[in-house]
Length: 52
Ligand SMILES: [Zn+2]
Image (tube, rainbow, N blue to C red):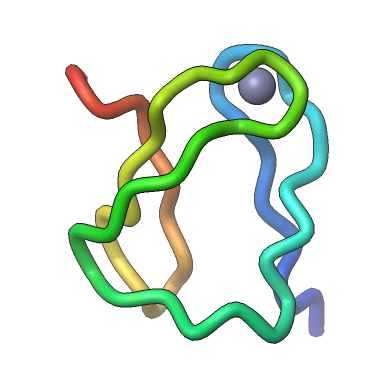
């Protein structure tokens, strides 16, 4: 079971979100490309670009 394995939809870098207390709808920036991302779903964890 892969947990916390989430990739940026833009640059596909691994987002190390393990241990983060994320909420649905929470926004974050990709540490690699700086793209604004939003947590669409927690189960399964789904990260999308903010404007999609
Ligand atoms: Zn990125």
